[in-house]
Length: 162
Image (cartoon, rainbow, N blue to C red):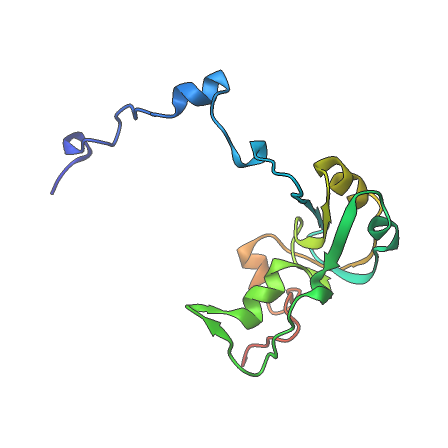
C-alpha cells in the first residue's frame, strides 16, 4: 500500500499559475465583467433558520429606480408532488422547492426574493424595500435532535412511515 510520503501531491507546495495575477489585481473575475444592457441580480435571504412566510410585499421594490423585475418562490414552477419529475438524477419536485422559499424558509440564508436591476447598487437598494412577514417556527441544528420523534418537521408534505 502506498504511503503519503510516496504521493507526489500530499504535503507538497502547489504551484498556482494564476497566483501572481490574483495578488497583483490583473486577474479578471465574474464580478468584474460588465456589458451594455446587463442586469444585476441580488437575492434577499431569510435571517431565520425555520419560518413560515406569512406575506411578502414587493411593491416598493418593484417601483424602485432601475428595477426591472422582482420575484419570489411563487414565480417558480410548482411541480406536483405526486409524480416524479426527473432531470438527470435530480427530482425537480424537491430541487425546485429548495431553490427559493415558498411557504417556509427552511434554513437561515434560504432565498426568499430576488431583484434584477440595471446596477448592482439599485438591486441592493431594492432588497431593502422588500417587506417579509415571518412566523418563527421551532428549529434544530443538531442531527440527534432532528431525529427525535418530537423534532420540528421542515417539509410538511413528507412523512415517514413510522
